[in-house]
Amino acid sequence: MNTDSAAHRGAGREPHPFAGPRPTTGGTVRRTLLRTALTGAAALGAGLGAGLGAARPATAAPTRGSRPGTPAEALKELAAGNRRWRAYRERHPHETPAIRRTLATAQHPFAVVLGCIDSRVPPELVFDQGLGDLMTVRTAGEVLDEAVLGSVAYGVLELGIPLVVVLGHQSCGAVRAAVEAERSGSHLPAHIQYLADQISPAIDHSKEGDARVDATVDANVRLVRSKLEAEPDLAAKISTGKLAIVGARYELTDQTVHHVS
Image (tube, rainbow, N blue to C red):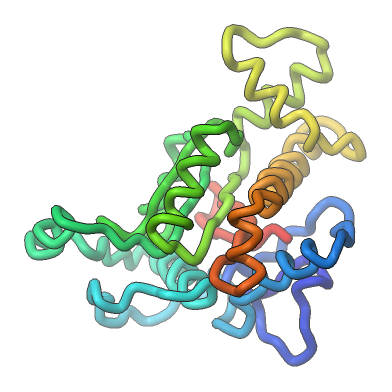
């Protein structure tokens, strides 16, 4: 992982599966021992391959029995899927009649992806995964509420999912609306103001114009990730190494997913 945070650069380790050249805004604030444990859990994917930008030769599609069982394995699978996606070598795995029959009786997804509702960023496509692979939760700007928290917790606590990815994206409309509403002092219509209120603590006031929107996309991913990490039941899983919660960002211009530290 080419992380952009020193907290994720252990000596002798290779790049994070969600690698990318984008800088982040500001440094990572060191927290309590629990926060240190959480950061360490999120770095479990180190050494699992180069950046997502490098195209790899296609190999045989994984079988249902090869479900990733650890945070590191789950990160590696998502990274490989995004490489296929951006190289136009998608497999569209796990869509056969036999898989559909199997999934009628049980599901064993290996990752929860909390992403935006943006129609250009469907997690199953950008990670080239199939039926039963991902549990996706999508809200504008990845905004959390009780229903979203309950959905993420269900995947982790009831289904034993080892990885949660908070997936922001380039040119997020919800983030832009929050930034512009704050700048103008205007009130957004109906329930859209609720979204802006949730995003506003992440607004990066060190930037101006489009740069502020862009930096806030990353800051919002960090904010949502930190809120999830602070949930006691999820934190307990992280402390034992059974769960990692990571931040990531999808670039619309080149279809790359990279890590947000």
